[in-house]
Image (cartoon, rainbow, N blue to C red):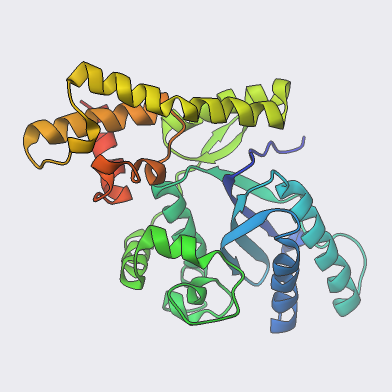
Length: 296
């Protein structure tokens, strides 16, 4: 039975695959370079933004943004071309990868940060290196550097971590932790429970409506953000532009607004952070505020 895989236009996905029968398919630098070249060569053609990567000895990890909904086509292309190159380089016949690639849908914000450091920490967990920056076949050294040879959207990664110290701190805190992936009938998801419900709804709509209709549904819901905010302002007799105080009442109203935005719109924490009352808060702080409010 084919594995279900969740991916939508503009979704974030953790993608991985490994060599058939545990074969060491990335056994030297030439093979690793070739695989990265294929990723770099084809990413724009298929509308893929690479967020993070790590090429190990017998498997690879990618974090990508599937901007045009072409993730399956992209993976088929790079795995197919690498397979042809590998058989010509090494010899032999047959498949190179064990199966179709595995993909986990990732909720933006904190979950995306967690997935990025999980991928970057693979060489440390496998004891290839002691420190995260010592492994040459991950994207770690593309961030916060002057390198001109980049495959990743380093600016995006730098914007969500802030600086190299925060990235390292996040990695240190996560080093001995596993991803808490949820297995659903629609596919694997790394997210909070609320996002799973939204995703299942999207999957059903995608099945019956098609991608273009799904995009219109999502865009329409985002259009309603202004209406939701105006309704909130009327109920609380405030303007959110003035909701910047540090007193307990202002904090409580901000928290309630955050909860409304999370549960009634498609806005991510990153998008909510652009709204004035939340501009000075970190994404991790927004996630913590929401989590505390939900357990009351």
